[in-house]
Length: 384
Image (cartoon, rainbow, N blue to C red; front, side):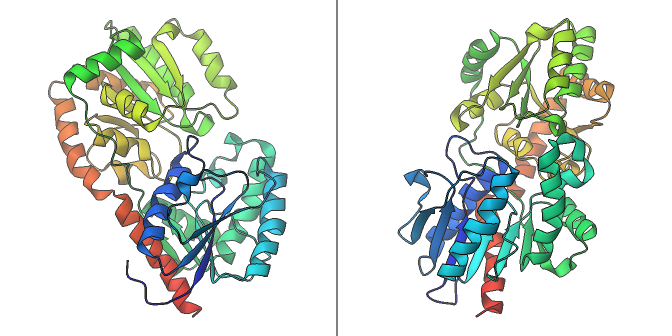
């Protein structure tokens, strides 16, 4: 990632850079900015936070942290932060570029900008979001896409979707696949036994990882698990890792109806170290969302030598390639069939694990950071 220009300033929206609370977009922000900042000491980076920040995300001496309140907890505050606080700061400081890794921009600023739009699920499944959130996304994101000097996204599926939905020029939208954290590694069998004792009393289990809201399709996963239990008398459990967000009522109703609900374990959010343990000790991952821009958990599972049952919807076939069993997210029976195959089909787990070892090599945060920087560089050069 060679840099040709000197003494440039890049302001960055880092409001999601909160250690201990990082989700997919947060990890993208953390992993790419860490690499870009260190690789480009000749650039001055201004990290714009909406609340108190952690010193561990100030990656190098060329980073200046700035806190602009108030914390952006809901759409009204999003509007105030981006259209007033960010606008006023950028107008005053006049950086060479504004980089936003969550896709949000300020429509009022004249600063050239790069927006990372991970996916536009809200255009296709608006009912999965609270009313005001979806209104905000569907009003502003087409305008953010138009406003951005360049757009970066994380799969070819999302790239085509953004181009088609928002009618932006194809050459304006760049692809940068997500990476996978290098700390994820397979467990030894002895380690896996200890983890299973801790989480499931020693039983084998399927695992889901992700934020818990309607798009992630936990309700149908629970239905599928009950169908699986009806057919398979083994002592398999389902471990659900992630934080509850919104509109989880149908999931909770389904859980209450299950005769095997005691075999479903919700862990809440885990640290990366704990997640490595839970992934590495699983029988298989069950990741069957309705809509996904990339699907980092399936690559994390591959890093841990765990086979994957994935949704055949949206970006996931592109990301998983030949290293997963695919199921229809709308069909609990299809998901159940994948789980039964994973238990009964001789040699299938080993074959998928082997394919996963090859597939995971396609995804690295070094490559993601380089691709993102190339997009930033194009905008800097165009405005030199």
